[in-house]
Length: 217
Image 1 (cartoon, rainbow, N blue to C red):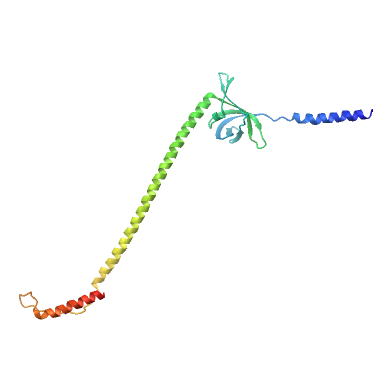
Image 2 (cartoon, rainbow, N blue to C red):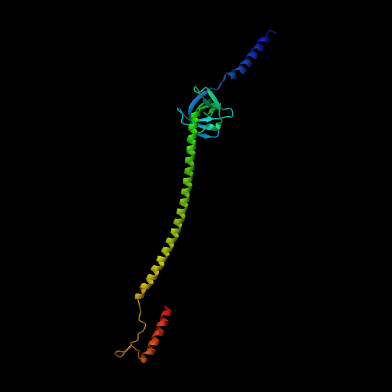
């Protein structure tokens, strides 16, 4: 019996140590201040003095509040929708395995929220105007494209007309080149313009010959 007691005490001590060790591991808490530069659902891009792009993760347990009063001692619970770009905030939480700060609390001032919301309203109006300008520009570009296509078709027609005119001009220029197929000499009496009947058959034959030549051409 005396030999079994030390073994029992030793076993209990080892088990106690094995259960006690994990309780000593505590996640380090971190406090940061910065300005929200972007928001994507539960992910916030925070610009701080040490990092231009610190990722802050919001969870269902994140406590979001607006500090109030002269000493900023009072706080008003707020929705996560209030965390808009341009808002200065203070975040307390711990980093996860991906070096992202998981937020436990988020605090901001009321006047800072008003200014950030005003900035967002102005940006929204500017974005809407820019969208309208883009749509108008696209409409104008489409109209210009349509007009350019019409001008291209007109230019093609003009070029075709010029080609036809050039071809006709070339044909007319060839009229200077002629051939003498036959000839008839007619004599008129002094002071007379009437053709003597003796020339009529010869003129008729010449006209018939000229007609047959034109048909062949």
